[in-house]
Image: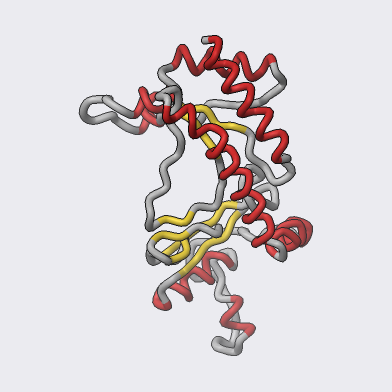
Length: 221
């Protein structure tokens, strides 16, 4: 949410779009998400699937004289408690987005000198993209350096983590998929990446502490 590509909000570009409201997202209700239907011709079927495979909504609108099961479907509705928890965040979505961008930009500004020195690589945002500061990551030299930096940050009570492992190395990837071609970038780039703390309650002073510890690490490496 709050991101765009060439002026179009993400979720509105294709026939369908989705937002996640998992606990790790910028706006959350613990689990669940939002499904966009951007073409009228798909609206009725999407409504049926959401209504457990029935045409119940059409019945309520008086379009059919009784409702029945007409297609695949399931129970996708969140509870009232989940919805209320999310709604309170959506009411101040701009404020949340603004705060996250402030934190993101502070990280970038305080680490940019390390990028200039070739110590780390920072996120790149193309000109035609608007991001929502969902995460802030850095890329270091290799897996060994990443492991050392993560351990260093942990000793200073900073919980930074690496990102997902490449899908082709996971159990499901090996079982259901196949890596075609040469693995020139996927594993190497995954091994370099560190995600730094990023959440709404994070203070700017805490960002500065984290970046200070990263600077100290590279001074003593």
